[in-house]
Amino acid sequence: MGQKAEALRQRIVAAASQLFYQQGYENTSFTDIADAVGISRGNFYYHFKGKNEILDAVIESRASGIKQLLQEWDVKYPDPRQRVLSYIDMLSDNQKNIRSHGCPIGSLCTELAKLNHNIVHNANIMFTVSCDWLTVQFKQLGHGKSAKQLSMHLLARTQGIAIITNAFKDSTFLRQEVHRLKQWFNEVTAKSVN
Amino acid sequence: MGQKAEALRQRIVAAASQLFYQQGYENTSFTDIADAVGISRGNFYYHFKGKNEILDAVIESRASGIKQLLQEWDVKYPDPRQRVLSYIDMLSDNQKNIRSHGCPIGSLCTELAKLNHNIVHNANIMFTVSCDWLTVQFKQLGHGKSAKQLSMHLLARTQGIAIITNAFKDSTFLRQEVHRLKQWFNEVTAKSVN
DNA sequence: GTCTATATACGGATAGAC
DNA sequence: GTCTATCCGTATATAGAC
Image (cartoon, rainbow over all chains, first blue to last red; front, side, top):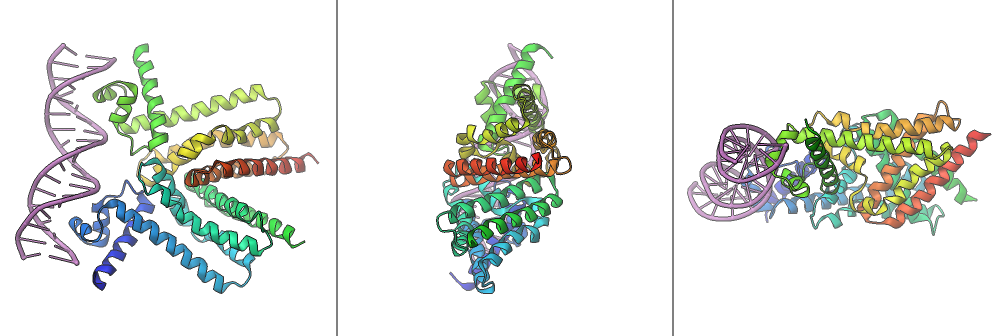
């Protein structure tokens, strides 16, 4: 496969990912993606076997995208506390998108759980990337045994915030909850220091 | 409209509500509902103008169902603390369904937010019923100004738990979080007593 | 009121020209 | 590699028999 084809493949995945986020997976047709990319419907099948394979690529793309971002933070921020606070700040940074379309990970997992796709069971790798990274941070903050539980808790909190913000179209609530979440994080990490 | 037709209408709404929960709204066809109820596809259009109207009825049905349950609790439990704890216990009571299909309210709101339906803006009335009721309970527990914020917070927490439980198919996490949530509630209400 | 038959549109997928 | 043309299944919705 040539470089040009590979580049087009990337563009298809990027467009599909955005459309899946805005409109949902099932509700996005090949026509939608084709129009966004500027190619014909038939051309898809040179790059992908079918819609399932595009979904697979989107999940893979999102997971590796998050992974890369988190690795950059590992370099950028020496303090694990700062890293986790940056993670929480993602909610504020993306509040407009969350208000309109929810969390890209959570909403996709929710949709796929309703379908009988085999891929459903692999969709949560998008969560796992964050979960594993957060667990490492909590371990570095002195929480050995409860690190994973705290990580999952934080993950769930962010998801709940995204759902309610999206349902009520209310960014004010998001900001309140971000504050509350940071408060919780400060209390939890303060405990471990002693 | 006769009683028999009204009864059939109820059965259609009940079947549709369950299927929307298990398979999603878009992914559920008239054929699916027809098979579940035991009627023909064409018969729907005597009772409903279209799929939108069925969705409307399902939302209405769920909202009034929750409202009724909460009103029963108002009678059954004299203590507002007990009422809120019962609300939290809904997570444990429905853990199997949540594991398989998430929260019926949250997942529907998430799906509808992706579509361009006009109904989307009314879907959150299902949340509002719980939110208003919880706000009343927190007010009775001495939280005047922050009652609504606490109510929304609790709502978000339950949603986050449902998402993660569903994504990871992990009921153990749900039980941990229910414990954590009750702990939070105890701390919050303990404060207000003083 | 409930049914069968059918209209119409659109989805994913394939074949083959270029 | 990318296109056009087309197949086929299924969706909502309607018409009209009973």
